[in-house]
Every structure is written in structure tokens, then in C-alpha cells.
Length: 320
Image: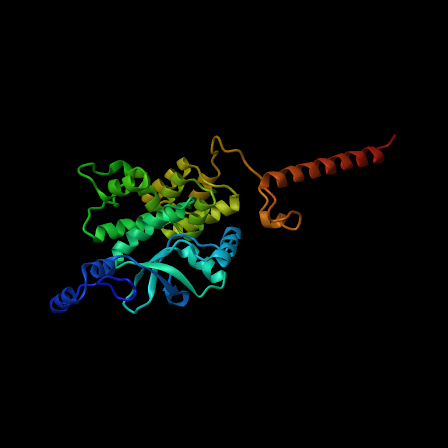
């Protein structure tokens, strides 16, 4: 049977017998089918620790305009909590769009799932997104692995990728097959959850590569803070080789600010020293939508014009 929310439950044996006597098979089959229900937005909660970002950006504004016109076309999926409220499994962007559009309800498919079943369903649904940040992969893979572990499946995150056992299929292998990643890559992403938020954000912004970030994840938070401070001071990121060195010094208890600074000043080989201007400092000269390449081109032209003017001024001031 199903309650008014669509959630299935088992009837006591006596009630089940009564239901069998006074309902048709068609009615009983219909009772078991999933139903789409219009649920008030005020009764729908986010999934706890939802790892996927939902931003009120230009794309969301466009989605809200569409929802305002035609409504939410694809039902979200949720489960009903013990307090009677609903917990979203998929559809967080649709709910924000519905809220921005001024709707009071949205269509939901309510499923009777356990906590771990809901976590796995939430991760699987959201991994279908077109663009997924490294931090989103890291947090969602970790949540799913933990749920799989609680469900009694074997997992091994204690060893490095090169040192993992290969006997039998482990959760890393199974998750890798499901999402199209190698077991080593799954392990690397999950390691990112050990990074301090500022460095994890740098990975999302493509300012530091995955492999160096994984090595930094093995450092204590205090050491990560020192590395972050050094990167900001030097205005440089780290190579994989440099982070391996830092991890080695940390393992020996020898990593401090002086050692970090020394490693930071080493030549990174293929990396050329770059001069960077924070985008916010250029905001009064360019519109927010100006591409970086166009900004660079304009700045170079302005500097060339300035140099010619300086050369002309020098020529006029030089003695004849």
C-alpha cells in the first residue's frame, strides 16, 4: 500500500487481508505505482550535505523565467522524512527555479528509500550533470563510498593508489565502473575531501592540478595553511614534484615555513613566471562579461600606446 505521499509501507497481516477482500487487483496495482504529487515548496528540504552547487547565476535566471511560463516540467525525486516533510534527492536546481519564479508547489515523485539508498540515488542522479566541479566529484564520491560501506560492501581508502590490493572486486572498482573512472582516480578525488576549503576552491578554479592537490591532502591542516600562504605570497602554484617533496619533508616532521618557501622558489621547469592582475582590480575598466583574452589584448594595446607616447616625449625633451 501507499500513503497520500506515495510512500509504500507494509500493512499488518489482518489489514492486508481486509484490503485483499475489499479492493480489486487493479486498485492494488495502482496503489503500488509511483505517483507525481504537487508538494508545497515550504515542505521540501535540501538533501543534507548536498555536495553539488546550486547557483543563482544567469543560467538559473533563465531557468526561472521558463518555469514561470510553463512550470516545472520534470518532477523532482524526494523521500518523505519521519516528521512528514520531504527531502530532495534530485531536483535542487528545479526547486530554486520554482522559488525564484514565485511558485508555491512543484511536482515530486516520492520514494520510500533508506538514508543510504537515498545518498546513492542522489549522487547517481546529480552525476548526470553536464559540468561537475572536482570538489563536487570528491564530496559525492566520498558520500557514496561511505553509504556503500555501511551497506556492507568492502571499501579500502587507507592505502595509496599504487598500493591497493587487487584481489576481488572492491567498492572502488564498482564505483569506478559506475561513473566511468579508474579506481585510482576515484581514490584521488576522495582524497580532495581532506583539503582545506581554500585549496579545494583553487582546484575548482583550475589554479592547481589534481595530482599536486592530492599530495597536499596528506598534509595536516596547519601545514596546508602555510602552503596556501606561501602560494599567495609568491603568486605561484605548485608542481606535482614540489608537492611530493613537501609531503616527504612532512613525513619526517621537517616541513615548516622555511622549507616550504625554499621549495616554492625552485624552478618548476616548464612553468614560466607569470605576472597576474586580479580581475576585480580591472572591473572598473571592463564589463563583467569581457573575456580574459579580450582584456589582455586591450591592456597590451594600451601599454603599446603608452610606450610610444613616452618615446615621443623623450624625443621632444632631448637636446638638439
